[in-house]
Length: 135
Image 1 (cartoon, one colour):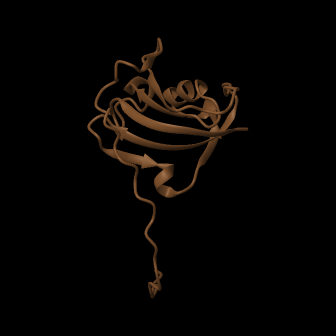
Image 2 (cartoon, one colour; image 1 turned 90 degrees about the vertical axis):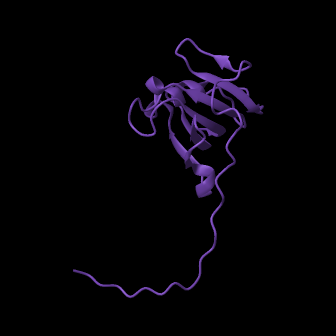
Image 3 (cartoon, helix red, strand yellow; image 1 turned 30 degrees about the vertical axis):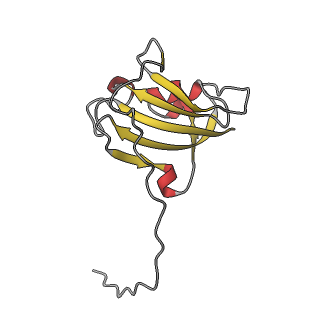
């Protein structure tokens, strides 16, 4: 057994979670839809020309919500981007990020079968993803 005496000297408030987008409840009519059921909409146009491939390593900022507006995860709120191989994430992310170019921010409506299925967070998920870099 270990016992620690801890004294809090200071703290600083972290970044606030992003505001819930108004259109998380359902896919808007102007969203692009793929055969798989993924829907997406460009929020900020990118500056790049190249799209990542299935084997690309990418750096992104993201935030995620359920369709009832519950915030569940965000690199933005942590203040740090994440990097990963594009073939190593949920299918909806792989397919959605593949559509993007560097600098682009896109909102994705990912059906449960392309996300986590019945595992939490279950159901359709909505992500805002900014593609920072393709490595």
